[in-house]
Image 1: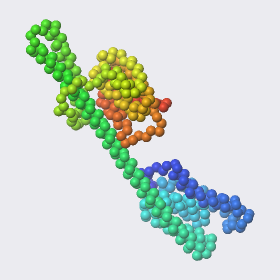
Image 2: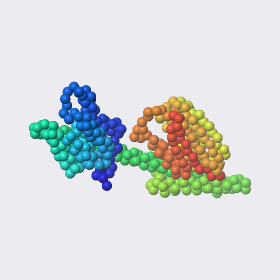
Image 3: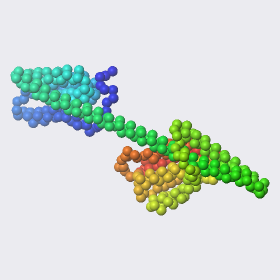
Length: 390
């Protein structure tokens, strides 16, 4: 077990690079000073061995910085002690101390700060008089105070950024849940409308059988077959409604509204394409569906909504671009819908973006199908598959 925080925010590459550059600044200045003044001005401790030792301690401190987030107080202490004899080690020591402060563990910060001030006093005392040592310690105390304020400020900024990210994530989850619920309610409303339509047909057909005495046996048989077919379709729609309510666990909504006509299905796609083309959207259609008259009504409604949302998504994110819609499938193999359009680069996802895709994913999942979307070769591709029994 180490003493670092278990959940630490990642440091971006730019920030890490700047920290290492700041820590390496004393080493760079030392190298420049040695090169410029070598052989011209007598320097204290200017022997080659001492110069190499000073630079070696600074380089070692830079290496140790890599683990400052995992072992904060250990690295801070290990980089502070060499400052007694090394000027170049002061950069890594200061960065490591600031990193330690961001953890806000005062029982570790205070002892490390005391060791740092003592090290700076010993460094000054070693190079000069007692007064030099005290002055060096005072300067070190002021520097550490500034580093402490900077570390606390950095930690507060991290905490604020983390809380904002959590709030944004929670808001996005809520928007996704609302989109899923809205899609379920819409599906339930559509099914309710279709059920009302079919039941009204059943009532009309049954009324004809009950009150008309002039029907031939063939007409009576046809009416009975129509009632049987509509009753069978109504049962299928009712199962779908009940399945929606089981998954949702809430009310269907719209139960008090009157019956309306059937919702659009795959047969209405041509009308949809004509409408969007009239509005200026360029759409190319490749329809390779076999036996489309055998496609279940419910699957046709889902297919219509998927294509409709895909065209809407293309108009929002790539206005004026050419959209390609590919439809294919047959009984036993399933229905495939593939819609693609150019994906303009550099678009940012706003707070309400992609909720239409969330709704489509929920609709497709409830229908027993799959849906995926990706960007490939500069095009946004929406690929959906719906079951179609033989």
